[in-house]
Image (cartoon, rainbow, N blue to C red):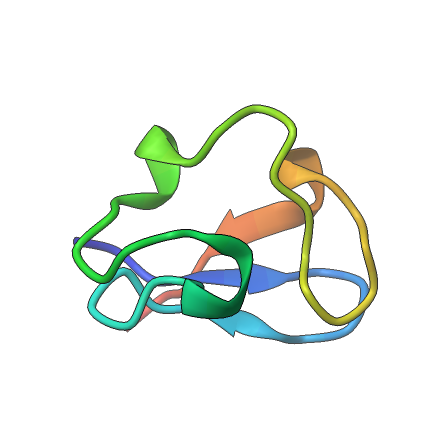
Length: 54
């Protein structure tokens, strides 16, 4: 699963870790995040994330 990075604050969403503080279990793909999920650091939506080039 791909990692995604916030284009506003550079916080990285890692599907292996998820976002447990906001109810997102480890193993949750970025595409499977709820539409109303926001960056836990700066609060922008999924549209402001892009895939991390590895």
